[in-house]
Image 1 (tube, rainbow, N blue to C red):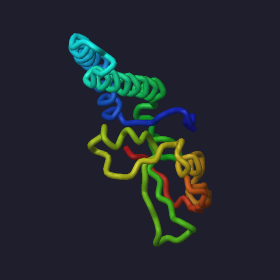
Image 2 (image 1 turned 90 degrees about the vertical axis):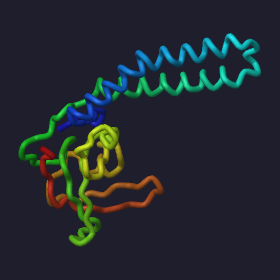
Image 3 (image 1 turned 30 degrees about the vertical axis):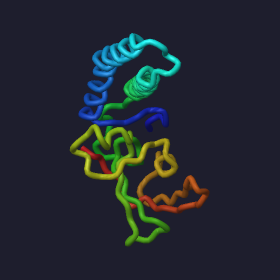
Image 4 (image 1 turned 60 degrees about the horizontal axis):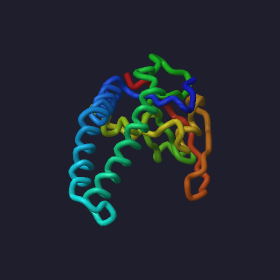
Length: 166
């Protein structure tokens, strides 16, 4: 079973996120340093809107760099099993709400970052850290699990089917 801190993603998603990280650490940092330098050259920093905006942009960019570094460091790339017996990262899961076979959802258990990074992805993605993802993680088809939504509501689902995305 995949550790809850591990983020599963496809090779395509990993590569795109790594490219974004390299761009931010290289050209991104260079460009923001130029903006800050140009704004400093204008004089009085206390009332310099351009300087404060550039510093804010720099802070957001550095936060994104830290986020990407953490995700890539904990990534499990393409680790989906051939014929899974239990829900794990990289597995496509079909669930039925309250055991109703007519009220189902299909989703991939993986990194939500994959939504924008993997163009081949055509289904919902829930992370193993999400309430639903954590509830189904490690369970098998036929198991009934429940989870608490952010608003405090309890939801019961039955795992109908699990399959590899590959």
